[in-house]
Length: 338
Image 1 (cartoon, rainbow, N blue to C red):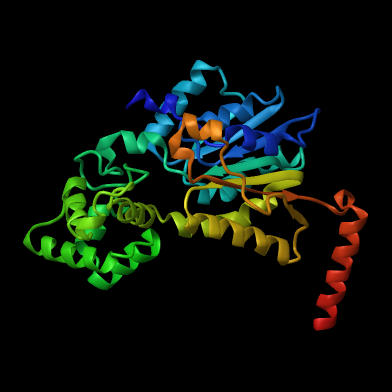
Image 2 (cartoon, one colour):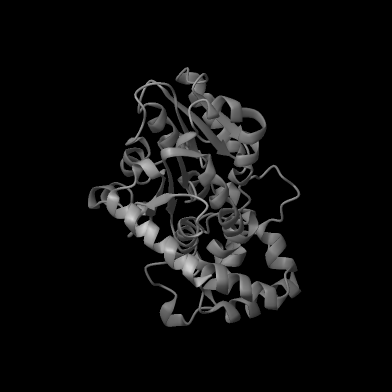
């Protein structure tokens, strides 16, 4: 295991902590959840926000869990930081089964966050196959110990041409998907494509010569697409957001950092669905997403595509007269339409 996790840069950390702790109670416990623990930067920042902060964190990556356990022991934080070895899609069920009574005493979670970006550890630890900068097995599984999850090599070598083109086009938004897939099929008919460098070479020669040496590598979009598919990233995100919102207490907030347009569109759409369905009162706090400051970008160029969106759980007592009037009017309109 590498120690690089401890040096991981936590994207939009100050902004996240501000939004999640702004309404924190001075008495009792404030429960938070960081559902993408990674290097632990956001989790420990939440823990340090107040003496009455208690944090539940999740991660499915063995390296992150081992490193997180070590950091929790070093900081003697085990009584207030609970690191769960799971994908965040299972978090609502785990809370309901094991911790619901404890958390309901304090009204629910004060803040829940997800940083959807792939940790620097995964890109810098070449053996995991996330980066084309290293020659490594074409793996890309976040949970590398789960043999039931197909690797990127499995997809590249076994998907039909039609399915592979759809994957690269939809998840990578790659305009040369057709040519890339044609060359993948040709190469895999000769021998299985097993390593990151094998695939990078295929993609490189699938691009027009004049576009092979741009700012971004030709492989960027295809590698992104495969990673998303291997880990079911978009499906899991889409199915989880609406199940997290009911865990919040009034004044509690859900904050999600996305790193590409596919994720951001899902977050924006799911927030709007929560707002429109009428089951819950909420307030979307970020009509436009929060993006990194120039200072952060100078410190960490990998933050450049990050976008933070926040939604707040409210009750009628928190509504202003203007908001009450607007909601009443919308309710009347909806009733008339029926």
